[in-house]
Image (cartoon, rainbow, N blue to C red; front, side, top):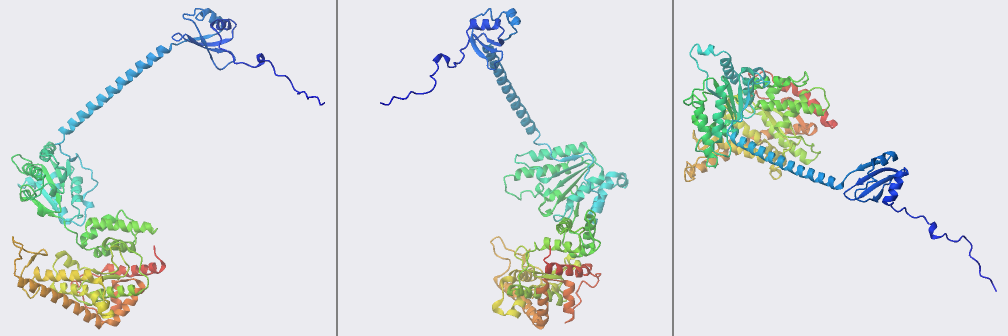
Amino acid sequence: VQQPMKRQGRSPPPLAQFPQEDAPPSYSQLITDIKAGKVEKIDYDPSQDLAQVTYKGKADPVRVGVPQDPVELLDSELLQSSGVALDIQSSEEASRRLAVMGNLLLIAVVLVGLMMIIRRSAGAANQAMSFGKTRARFQMEAKTGVVFDDVAGVEEAKEELEEVVSFLKQPEKFTAIGAKIPKGMLLVGPPGTGKTLLAKAIAGEAGVPFFSMSGSEFVEMFVGVGASRVRDLFKKAKDNCPCLIFIDEIDAVGRKRGSSMGGGNDEREQTLNQLLTEMDGFEDNSGIIIIAATNRPDVLDPALLRPGRFDRQVMVDLPTRQGRLGILEVHAKTKKISEEVSMEAIARRTPGFSGADLANLLNEAAILTARRRKEAVTMLEVEDAIDRLTIGLKLKPLLDSAKKRLLAYHEIGHALLQVLLKDADKLNKVTIIPRSGGIGGFSQRLPNEENLDSGLYSRAWYRAQMIVAMGGRAAEYVVFGPDEVTPGASSDIQNVTGMARAMITQLGMSSLGQMALEGRGVIEEDLFGRPDFSEEMMVRIDHEIRGFVVEAYEQACRMLLAHRELMDLLVDVLVEQEVIEGDQFCEIVAKHTDLPQKRGYESQPADQAAQAAAPVAMMRSSQHQGGGV
């Protein structure tokens, strides 16, 4: 029989040998430990009869329940002899402190909130009280940084305003002979011509207190505010006599009374009435000179324009060629311009540009120069900036295709007639590089400066312009036939029709005689919506318009047919170069036919813009062939 095997190993220890967690000591044990020097620190809370006891050599404190008024625990001699630190702190007292602090904090928050509400209420009251105060910017000595030397291109207006400065500086020069300075001067002109710049120059030169504000700052939604601001403005001006007041865009407050049915009409009229009274009423305002600017003199109230208020109206018109030259020279001082750039050429190239346009032109040229990583602005950047501002952004050139050749014939039709017609303006350039705004190409003329300044265009000039405008459609018809003409001439046809209508109904340049049948391009009608002439006259007008347009179109076709080979040659050059400057274009045409002497250009000096065109054309050609910038 097999004996059962005995299990090897040690027997388990008795339960008493297992480690047990230390139970918290009793109060008597705590006193014993204190006397034995085992306790390091005691935190006693009398409100809960508890003590947090920290033994020496142990990090965690032990909680011990103590009786009320523990005499042994509070025995200072025992604790001192045993080296025990005792800290007595009641939790109820801490809670009371926190409660008191919370209440104080709540009271402080309420007080701060009340103070903010009171301050805002006071601010609103002050704002309401100051709502009728003037918003004019006041400078005891205006430091605009602009003087008359910084203003160019408006010499007549500058001379008028220099008298104001002379009177403020030397009044005895005028009063000695009984002269009185005008109370007000109104600067009138298109936007960007320098009206505000002239006002800044006056402020910079006069050395007297200067008030400036916009006309729109007088009028508010509340009735009476505008009139109050006018009174406050003149009150401050009287306290600082002699002084200048400049009101920009005065048409915002000076419109004709009764011309509007809007809800703010009464408020605006009250403001205007107060302004009229302050400018020339019972009170004497000697020493206060008012200068205002507007580009809408036709909408101003007649009472505002009479002598005694605005005694003078100074026209600040678009600058002439000499004026543009002066403006360009002023703005060129702050630009790094290459020596090859001719300001005279740019001035001839930019008829109709205002002072702001010319400043923007040089700035655009400087931006293009920086983009192309050049050290100075050249004529190429100036030409590109002019095209950018007048025509639009340059797009990618068309690929060699039938469309590109069709576009070239269209533009050559315009350009060739521009050169061949004696009464047409000079050609500046022709290009087939597309531009933003849907312009596929363009033929650009160089207007006659004398005609542009005077506005006196002859009947022959109008006819020549109509023939040139029909040159694009005529070239398409001559080369490709009647079935291949495109809508590219739609704007040309609109221009020709409008020009023909103006010649017939406004300018008296037709067989209908010297009759004004339209006003500013709109047929004059009576109260019942009927025109001031008969239906038969309307039929005759339509017949005359058709005759003018057909005559211009047929003349364009005849001239292009007579120069068909020359037109093909010019198209080949344009397709290859994509741009032909006016000087190069005339040289090519002159080899095949005689060029007429343009009217109005005989007395002018050699066009420096054309002289600069040759190097520009070479630079453009290399740029297009090499990819450009």
